[in-house]
Image (cartoon, rainbow, N blue to C red; front, side, top):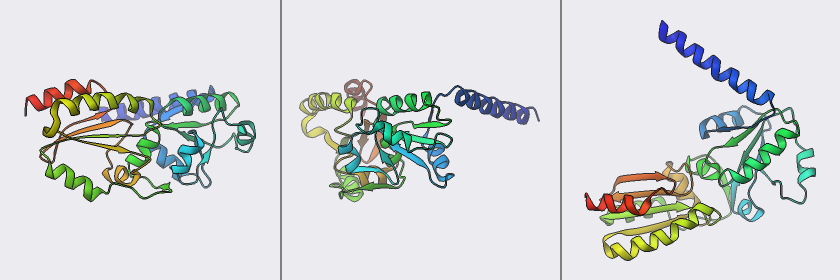
Length: 237
């Protein structure tokens, strides 16, 4: 009985905090399942892709509009939105979506939600999306590579992701050190979105996964100390 009271109290507190946040005209970062659920609850959801037009053209959430605070028609785009209805925003990371969310909140929008992990979380979580290309790498080919090599390091990211770019020189250092002992596979959203969706375990860019004989040794959401983690894993296996 005490546990039920505690759960009820905790839920009530979270609810009250959410109300307080939105009453102050602020935005909220939410995880994929909550973001998706809130979108599905709306008859005509206001979804905004805050990335650049080149990124949007390659892939995006179905039904999304594309603009951010730097867009030439920004004021016109925001004027077309209903400030009394929820707005759902995403980008690659949090920067562009955060700027847009902050400005919309200042303009009086009552509910502004930012997708934690951005487009990586949406596609990597297997949610429906638009893409104008066919993935270069299929899930079957991915599994074949993982199964046929003793060690495989997979780097999943996007060419538009700033943090993803810092991974590349580290991968080159690892490739030079381990050579044939370690197979490195680089997967970009702009080339193989469907395999990222099919994996259903990507939450952010970059995501790094190390396999040994087909089994995951580690999975990193973000860069971290990749070189040290690879060295430690291979030394112990």
